Length: 199
Ligand SMILES: C[S@@+](CC[C@H](N)C(=O)[O-])C[C@H]1O[C@@H](n2cnc3c(N)ncnc32)[C@H](O)[C@@H]1O
Image 1 (cartoon, helix red, strand yellow):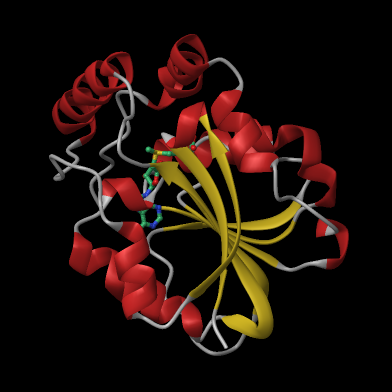
Image 2 (tube, protein in one colour; image 1 turned 90 degrees about the vertical axis):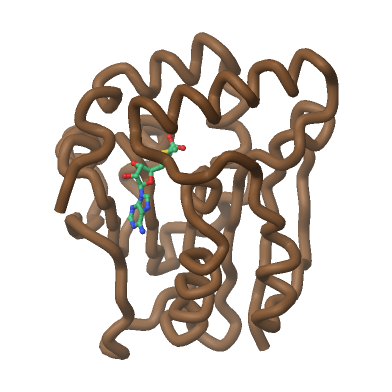
């Protein structure tokens, strides 16, 4: 599989911190609770840097499409009990998870890819399990709109992203029968952390 993040993987976290400070890390950690008793499925976790403080409590599976990101995550999360997997997650029915984390990964996918993934995930989550989703939504201010345009262009050039816009995530979740139960807005709602479940 081609590694679209091989060029930016070593700089990714530093760049994100330069532009957003600790806001993205905050969004990825704001709904973390009782993880020591949960089996977690992390998809597209990147270099894993922002989970280092909770690494010791993490167990479950970590899936990354980029070999470079996965290698960094193995180092950053070496104290965790996660198993690390290269490629795209496909449920095989053998393991059910308490929680799935999709943090800043759906915005890299086409609508159809998002729909396929969240439909797969229904069969990978326990009955009372939850999906912890975090991503960029429509930019609010002029400044945010400018940064968003630059980011979309940057990732198209350096990480082969296909999208030119932000997905309508909520429509796709609702179409697939998911229900939103919690939400935290950061940066006036440009970044949102949400909890979804499927009954
Ligand atoms: C924009 S980066 C975000 C990384 C990390 N979540 C963060 O917030 O720093 C998106 C990551 O998702 C990975 N990715 C994209 N599609 C994926 C898929 N279907 N399965 C696993 N990883 C995927 C990419 O390789 C990349 O590392």
